[in-house]
Image (cartoon, rainbow, N blue to C red; front, side):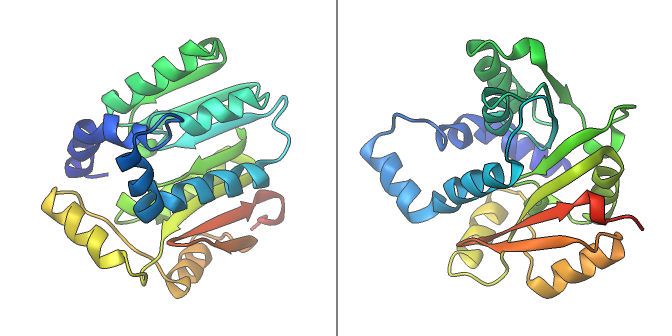
Amino acid sequence: MKPKVQRYFQKTSQNFDAIYASEKSLYQRLADLLFHGVIEQRFKAAFAELGDLRGKTLLDVGCGSGRYMLEAARRGANRVVGLDFSQNMLDLAQRHLKHEGYDKSSQLINRDFLEFQDQNRYNFALAIGFFDYVAKPENYLIKMRQLTTEKIIASFPKKWTFRTLIRWVRLSVAGCPVYFYDRKRLTKLFKDTGLDSYEIINLSRDYLVVIRMERNTN
């Protein structure tokens, strides 16, 4: 992951986290309607795929402000671990988890995922809004595969939507690279990483991919 991405999320952590807030101004609600609808879509779709989390473990790669970790803990996950290289994001995540009493069953790590060392394996791994900013995703997926026993759930921004160019320009001006995907690229990516059992769920401007590990035995 590039330092440019790290700097971007250090600066925008509060604004990003506000997308998940329950109380919003009229302006924020309008922005959600126009630009952020996919965030709610993929949140609901991801937890529908995760199912019953009671007693399970979850690894959140690029956890940001910890909103997925918090929801997993609410749903009974035994242990949730989040990695992010933005300390500002992790500070927000710590605040949310501690506020609801889940700080003891969670762990937050400020580190690039490729540098993460863990002898444990997790039932589930998430990478939501993560591969948007990864130039070479292959090694990240391979490592996620090594650490996951049931499902990997990851989102990938679509290459061709009315917002693709707008988002690319906005992030380029902010100095943050962003990468887009079509189905052809996703198919090649999963073939190259030995992940042959997956489902691509079509969202408004993202693909949500569910990779079932018990069928990926190669």
